[in-house]
Image 1 (cartoon, rainbow, N blue to C red):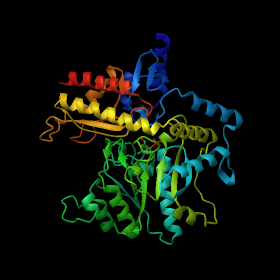
Image 2 (image 1 turned 60 degrees about the vertical axis):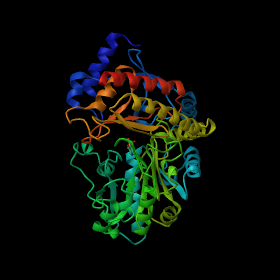
Image 3 (image 1 turned 90 degrees about the vertical axis):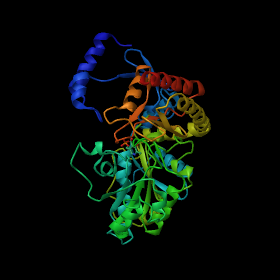
Length: 452
Ligand code: PLP
């Protein structure tokens, strides 16, 4: 650990020169960083003072193979000392990008058959919107421009992805908005199936398509399981219904797999839980487990075959599209996922987590609505779970429990931006073991005691 003097100086420099993402600026310059991470090993991270934490959130749902993985570091080293970076513009290519494209396509569902590389999730979703609109242009349907996104979704922070995001807190930062983003309510299977008598019909995707006109809509985007919005699992039948609705109306379905992709839910991709094949699929985070900035957009054979007929320059791309070092890490990540049967571990650990949830549900009357699909999990806190009654708005129980866990060296994440929803999200690295799950449950148990 560093000396007290060094740390104090680091904090001052942080407060002075580093504008942090998704952080309250006024509080930050007053209080400084909550934690300065220094090291990581497996599911644990250590701060500059040498205090160790379980990373129950995989940082931002991305450090899927855990911290300090030497194989991933070696893959980066090997590539960097061969050729760290080369461009993919102007017809240039590199072996690792090609091999990763081939690999991702081989594990992707259905006929998803090509990938456009980006540097992260927001770029992937912006690219997905542009590709969807471009596809319809090429098909002679230039009026199809709008994208429908659904309540509580998180799709990123760039202008288009940020507008598609339906967590209001992310809209206050800047007035810039993509005018072609429209919103629908989420998770309404009966409505999407066309049940107009359902009280939720108004505002559901089907209703929005009817109101806007299918000839104005390019795509629907959704997360198979919403992450930042509070770990909301699509009910069975929902994704199938939305897919059928899209087909019926000539609308592309974009699955945002930025969190779900690469094993997080116990299947390789979130949509695999329901055997739905989207037309476009955005990926990022888990593709490198956070060891490099990489994302991508997969497109169906039909979209790919249409686009490759285009004989002018495809005026879209990022300097780091197909970054050789990032792609080398991506390849190694998938190799480890497959070689070490990580998905099997995810499914086993889901069971352990659910046992812990059952114990906490029995013990605490405020603890409710726990869910876990693979290691994408969460629970809610309610004043009266029998009556489905939330806590008063002035109380923030999810934030409180997360703080109490933090004091006990467990990092979790609260999702309590929505009135009456006090959700704690749990998403540990996919390599977590039984003992470490128990440790997490014990800490949550102790934190809940404080709360009572
Ligand atoms: N989509 C989803 C589902 C996400 O959870 C995120 C980030 O949390 C993004 C997109 C944006 O990705 P990035 O932060 O890499 O731009």
